[in-house]
Image 1 (cartoon, protein in one colour):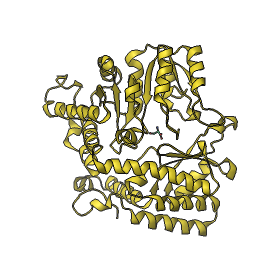
Image 2 (cartoon, rainbow, N blue to C red):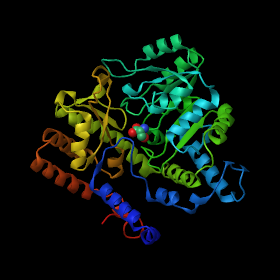
Image 3 (cartoon, rainbow, N blue to C red):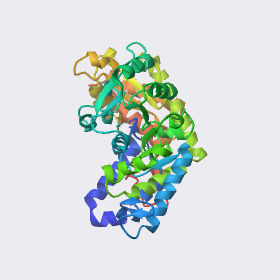
Image 4 (tube, rainbow, N blue to C red):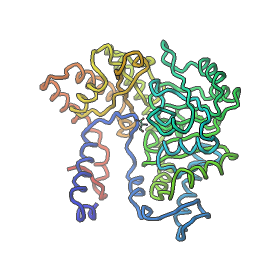
Length: 423
Ligand code: DSN
């Protein structure tokens, strides 16, 4: 980073401060993890500057000899990792990937059945604030009020009544496994395409820790920076017959030039995802989530669905008389970073967000295990229960810092690297 330091000390200082923040705070954001420095080097590499509209061997710009090899490598590694027939590695984000999947086989005004945001779905699955809702007609399924899990009979009823051309499975805050086989069967019964957005789960799927949607789906999308531990950007997997349509929907349909540095970073992430070290982190991610949920329940906090099958733990704080937003703020003040989240019951409590979404991907990347999950549960509860009590919160903050210092992230690369590693 010596060039950044020389050219823009303000930005350089911000990078140092961010590195310091990462080292000294507990990252429980379910949509984050810590990327390997090799991924970051690829992101900041010379490939940042190459303009490359089109696909390998079919570019609109000259000089793509190495960019072509990078993209082909990323595609081949991705297909091998997920057992997919076709991969498009150009989406700039998960949302861009989803938009392109819709436009690959649907026309404006076509019907799509997807999960409601309030039940755990995603904005790009047809929320009114997303452009997707202005292009297509969405109907949403939710979760069963009692089990807080998907009711597949309800999905089937809605699919038969609505007659969608596509059914979407996948969520951004749903702690249980989705039965992709059942959803695919429903899609088949109503002659709809079946699309799975596995943005949150890609790392767990790549490691074989949870079942893969790929054998059941026409299309699968994901983003690379969550459990997959890569850099920014998205990916679309699909069956061979849809390959050309998906490629055209990305470029020139929804995007311009590909970001070759993003693609290079994806290639590195796919290589790392084939290592035993990666699989170990994914197993730990799942074990940590199960243990964290159990530790919080032991302290009498209600966990949505009563537990978890993935990296997410959704706390219901309505019984504690504290909103998700207040919990998020007080936790951040002691160095615990998590986010407020709508939970199923909130639909009946106007304007209220009672949930707190926790994810264990980043703490697993730090190699934290069961004893640390018990400590984290204790730190979370002490913080929420002592909100407004400065002295108590200072003690928690100091404990959080001690825990983080014992499990370094990027500072372990300090000796032989030029990365920002904190002060
Ligand atoms: N989809 C958003 C989330 O789950 O937090 C960002 O990736």
